[in-house]
Image 1: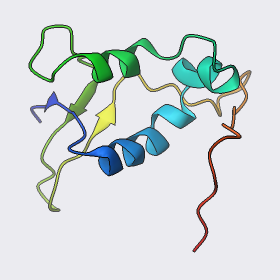
Image 2: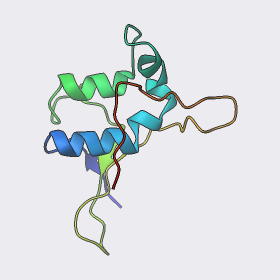
Image 3: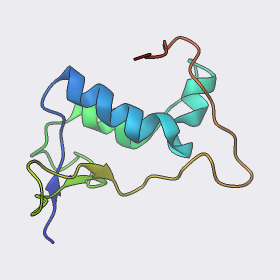
Length: 99
């Protein structure tokens, strides 16, 4: 399946993507633990560059899903923080959603 660069269409899409990928990834865990630390370079480049810019990260991709409406956005560099030897770093500044 052919992929294309993914860029959230709005802030809500960006927050959903961050929650699904970035907030659970080893690449951004340091910044979530210490706000003065450098975070994920991929995330930073998505905020700086336009999707059609050569510097926009190739790790954020999407493709059309034939069996459902919409696309399948994901980060191909994702490394779950739940893997052995790492710890989940919860951002205490972020609230919890309850239903």
